[in-house]
Image (cartoon, rainbow over all chains, first blue to last red; front, side):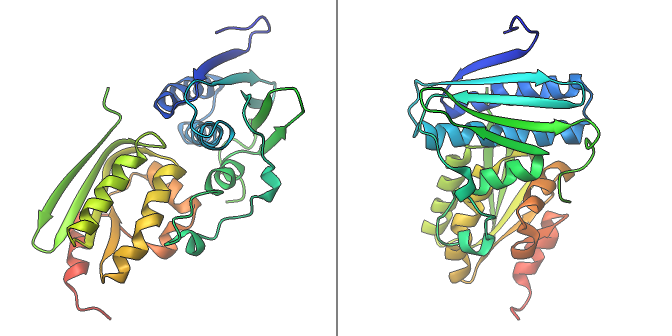
Length: 150
Length: 118
């Protein structure tokens, strides 16, 4: 869908079988923006992690809710804004995962948030009462060739 | 459309699982089922060949983490092989190379299972 401001957005139901569709949408837009294949892959993975978190945590696997993924290309950066109307959570409670702690404890949480931070230049959360939750994933053009912190 | 496929080959005392396609939150339960089945059948020497794995997210990585301890307790292991650079980068992002053996080639991993344990 093209919005009036030229941004492109896609709405999906909160089901994991729609993740592939979102990845294709975001990957095409990232490559069209001029990102390398590696950067486009990193952006796609970060968006997948964000949408997966929404399905699991915000909507707790309810399959009839909506997720909106909006692409907002800026002059120097590529922004993806992801909206949901589920439960909000405080991402600052998520610390860097310790792989050894995860192993054997069937503990899965926290990996996605950590990966989003590593894959993107900026990750912002906007939670306001009465409004949809928003996650903003930002990648700068100039930093395009490396994963942050590597 | 088939997003993800698992093919299992058993040879002597090693089971090789070939992954194909996209391993994400939608398809990760299929891999969980495969590991559960291997454990039930007492097959603990496992090589996961990732040659045709095009994509992995943290949901897929989580499956490897959930089962490896059970498998190691039974004197087995999950060894990973044949990753494309794109897939390797995702494993690397979470520090997998420190805790898992990753080989370029399936045969290298199979041979390791036949070496005397240190």
